[in-house]
Image (tube, rainbow, N blue to C red; front, side, top):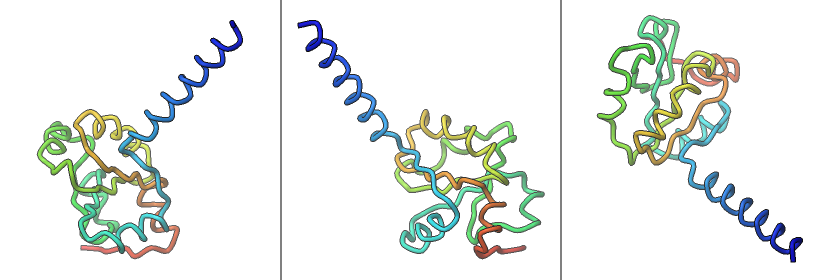
Length: 131
């Protein structure tokens, strides 16, 4: 009886963990997968959370800039449409990884994190736009 109960508890825990992962609005993608998403989804918003001065070195075409270190970062995110899909990145992935919890808390439905950030995008040979 104890073995059956333990098995049922483990199975329930596994199913709950799987459900939580399935409900996670954040997906991690590399540069190639991100480029494919951008090509296939005209509603995808590229959200570059680097400092404005960093964009002078280049950016992904059409990217919207919201500075992660800006005092109003969360307020600017709140103003965005939570239903749209977002590709979020910084320079190498540190700031954007830290921002993911904020996206979840604010109720965003689909967030794609560009692993490796803009540096990974560039290293993968993806197109870069300069002002």
